[in-house]
Length: 244
Image 1 (cartoon, rainbow, N blue to C red):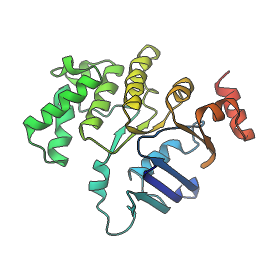
Image 2: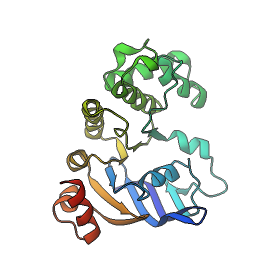
Image 3: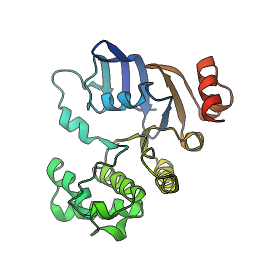
């Protein structure tokens, strides 16, 4: 298997508080990896370090064989290869749905507007939002906003999609529509790294589940192993609490 991202000895501190401690971890091409763990375990910080929204305190991030924390690396070019979907959608409220998916392509990838619109409509269609191209972002429900945010990330045609608890800000009845889109993407062979508290989703969709606690990776493996036969006491305790 081809490793898209490989993390070696990654650490991150905020002042004296060490949030990530010596993380070793990789994502293979076409793999769906779900990261689980309680709040404050370092899951979101790990994603934010991978796409360099946070600068790691130490370690390496190897992308397609190159250490992107090295001096010579073009961070902007690297970032365009990672699609990011946040908890809070981060849409441009004053733009319509189509523009939200076009603006990054034109600015960052220098695509012509007509081409960018074609690409945007293709991915809005994938997430079931193509009939809303002219709607303003603030007119949409939370679930619709998150689907547009996914289409926007896909429009950049990234190598890897990063999802940071994409359903945590949604009303319960909207969670399903977003998870369905993500399930379909997982089946399409897209490389996905997903921080989630949706355990049933992780069970069903992940090729590999990573359990984090207090800034370290405690255990990782196929979903059936992690959920049915966890090896570590900390994993068992966490699952007992969350799967009650």
